Length: 215
Ligand SMILES: *[C@@H]1O[C@H](CO)[C@@H](O)[C@H](O)[C@H]1NC(C)=O
Image (cartoon, rainbow, N blue to C red):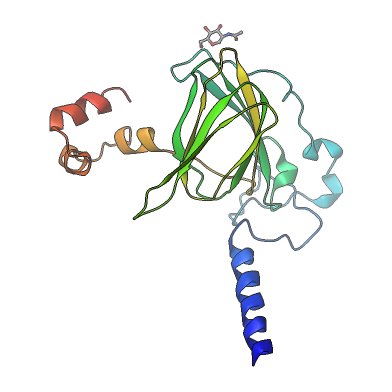
C-alpha cells in the first residue's frame, strides 16, 4: 500500500516535470531550419548533414547593450532566434544591461522559469505570487547574487546602484516569450475598451486615456 502511494507520487512528479517546460527532444539535436515551410511546435529540423558548429554558437555577449532609452535598460537575447541549435532543447540565455535607475517593466515569461545572476552593480528584483495573495517576494542583489523568477509569475528588475549594471539570465525554454504588463494592458492594438480598464483599475476613463496615449 505504502509502496503504491510512493509510486503514484513519483509518477505524478515525473508527469508534472514533463509538461513544465519545453518538450523533451527525441534526437541529439534539431537545429532550427527557419526556411522550412513545415509548421511544428518549435521549428522544423535542418538536415543533420548540413549542421555545423556555428549553429550552436553566438558571440558578443561581453558587449554592453545601448541603454539610452525610455526604460534605461536593454536585453541582448541568446534564444533560438539567435542560436538555431537551441531548437527543442528547452533552454536559453539573455544579457540585460541597466543604466542607473533603469527598469525592466513588470512582465512574465509564458514558457519559462528564469534564473538571474548579477555580474555588475546592484539590482532590486521581485516577483508577485498569484491570486488571492498577490504577495511581493523581493530582494536587493549584489554582484554575484542569484535570484529565481518562477514560470508564469510577474517580475521586475531595477538598477538601484550608482553605476551601470548588468546581469545574465538562464531561461527554461528555447523561446521563453515575454508579456510586458504595461505594454499589453495599455498598449494593445486595438486598445482594450476604456470602460474595461477604468473599472479594472478603478480610475476615471480620462486616466486610462492618458496612460494609453503613452503607448
Ligand atoms: C544609443 O541609442 C541612442 C538612442 O537610440 C542613439 O542616439 C545612440 O547613438 C546609441 N549609441 C550607440 C553607442 O550606439
